[in-house]
Image (cartoon, rainbow, N blue to C red; front, side, top):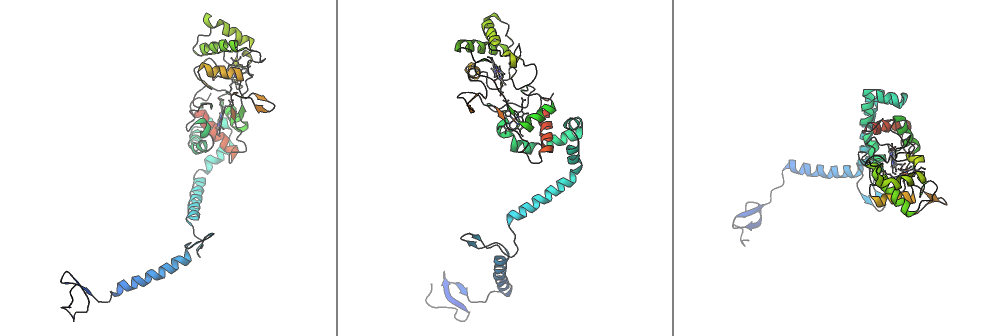
Length: 299
Ligand code: HEC
Ligand code: HEC
């Protein structure tokens, strides 16, 4: 900085850099000052009008009562109202018609499937997988292998009341030995490959009769009617195709309880009842049943 100001009459502040770079003392332009004050005013306005100052137990609410969350709820409400108006006819039909009638109507069927995806994601996907492909210990819904039946009315019952599979431990009388169980497991594996009649598994086949597996799984491993028992003649496994896993299922059964408590190693298979769980259950159960039916395997 120079010691002597070579431009004393210029109105500079006397601050000079690099020989000739001077700081002048002019007032700011009027437009600039006005916006500066307008800024102050709007700060006060905003502070009073909107939620702004954090407090120990929350924040000032503001005169407007506005919050981002309430604005979000408003727009969701608007969207829902719009949807309700646009799809009022379809929703009325969904409520008025039976699930079989909905299934037969191309437009309503498509509508039910489209409007089920979110519901399925929220209420079913955790167990059955995002698109019904199943998870370990939770059945696949996209095939035509049904424990409880693939007619749409049976699917409605599965969802409405829930389902609990039951298979006793060690055969119907509970009297099979470990070696018999190993033999019958070999027979079950052969059944799934279409080799149930081969001499190598004849002993296992005899155990299948002795253990009265037939009562639930049918004489040839295929249940007479869907009542929860797995079809043993296909390659679709409710639990697993691993021989040790099959032995476990036969040894400890499915949902076997002693004094009201599941015994160790028994398989658990409980489909919860959704009658009370789903919002607007009457319509949404029909909707989801059509969706599951259309996933691929409905009968
Ligand atoms: C807590 C886990 C769970 C949830 C959530 C769940 N399920 Fe299930 N679901 C099961 C189990 C386990 C079974 C098999 C029951 C058995 O072993 O007998 C099953 C069986 C079924 C069946 C019968 C399948 C057959 O082969 O006959 C249908 C249909 C079904 N679920 C649909 C649904 C729908 C639709 C939802 C959503 C509203 C849903 N499930 C939610 C666990 C669940
Ligand atoms: C009271 C009826 C009942 C009897 C008796 C019964 N089961 Fe089962 N079994 C079931 C049910 C129900 C399931 C399916 C459980 C589920 O999915 O929740 C099942 C499942 C199985 C599975 C699993 C299949 C898979 O796909 O993973 C095997 C293996 C099996 N049973 C073999 C046998 C054998 C062998 C016997 C005779 C020793 C037998 N069961 C006796 C009802 C029975």
